[in-house]
Image (cartoon, rainbow, N blue to C red):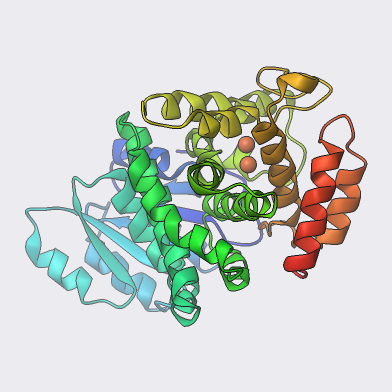
Length: 370
Ligand SMILES: [Fe+2]
Ligand SMILES: [Fe+2]
């Protein structure tokens, strides 16, 4: 099975054990844009490694070599508590007795096969993020709703993409409403902070881009449906990243040529997916399609130049760069906004400097320390 190079931190690593290679491949595919997955046929080899390295979560299949899944759970729990390692236990639906036993163990989510891709991701993510999502309960209701609703939208899109189904735009807009309300009431700081610790980086980035684009729009007088287009466009702008492998998406160093080609393809994947929704406003397509274009024509995927770049595309690329610089990543702390703006100020061939200054002024005035 895959032999990935392990990082020193177990964050965003997923281990999975089963006697079936085919099943392990399925898990790997389901998780590949969210987690760096290492799979095991041999439970003892996994137990040895767990003494040295603890991943974010562990998937134990009921069918193992030489022991039962329940035995494996108790062996793991003998030295790793539920706080240290969440477990997802997957089992055929006919073995209900084991399902009950597994559900009784703290920090174990039992999942009946067959399940949808999102159910597995949700079972993993809800445990990995239980502490951070629990903190959301302590913030302002409207900001809390903004976080929960956008997360729900985001998670459901993972399913739609893998099933080849379109997203219903009215569901996205309904889920974006609390976010817009929070922005209009200037009541969004805890939300921007609260999202940073979530382990699904694509969600964190998209939520921050949605909020910042929404703020930017409000500051320049964009209202009503157009304001929703900006906000929803921010949330949806990178959904094609859900098909990009974790190794490329979260690589700490510079991408090599081949990896960059894969990374750039996220824009086409996003457009292919969004195109299926006939009711989608054109503005959302522009935000998704133009956020990596540069004024000098050196951007991707279309190499648009100067006036070919729509105002929405220009706003989106400013926010995308700002967010990428100030997002917290596994391998880097967030950059202070002032430093991000000084870098962006030198990107004349890339970003519209007039719009960038409007955004800078608005942000430093209203948000301060992000
Ligand atoms: Fe992007
Ligand atoms: Fe982005």
